[in-house]
Length: 308
Image (cartoon, rainbow, N blue to C red; front, side, top):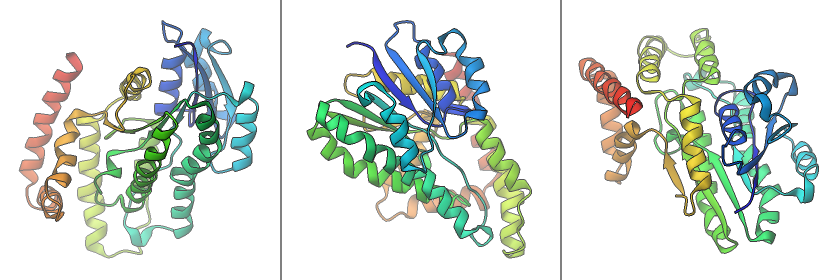
């Protein structure tokens, strides 16, 4: 297989930046990377990380996933509109009590996380079908499999992504186009830090005192501990994604963090839904010592996996 052109969205930071750079610096020179972002004023970090690969195996282009014209302009600027691999990575986050969330902000989140993906696939899938070749990789989340306290709207957008991809994958197979959902757990990025920094300052006056207490004293505290106990780095997720891109038979779903798999497996183990709901309820509200003990075990496993 020759050099493949890979279009990656959301490359100003985090996973998108790490993946674009990893592909561009591939020692086997298997990729030409089109690294895109909505705001080109934020390109400095990517340029610095790309180093000598900039304008050689990596080019930076503007693409706003919320705008069909922007997507079409970017794709039309490529020779023969050639995109062998699309990596849909652009996304936004939202956490907090539902009563405190603005509906227009929820709509904006869906406009990026879900409809951004839809616009990109709508533009690129016909070309891939015509060529009888292509790979669509979608950066989803374990929250597209399992809901989580105070992540109602974000998880809903990722559930929508899962349904869209699972439905479309069958048609894509007929045209030799592959689809892969990459499902990270916690990833320590500037994106995540910003979401939690904003949550710390969130106006909770629209909700009741008990919900506000649970959010501030339990959820934010535990989330911070989980992120820094078992969270992956963007480079780790990028490496996993690279392996999926080069695989001859990539899976439809791939969870990047093995430590999270037992949690998502509970959902499939009990079709009634009682098992995961009960487990998360007890973990959060009734068994503080068990939660902390579990985190300690996960920290040890995470260090061992990192050293392996």
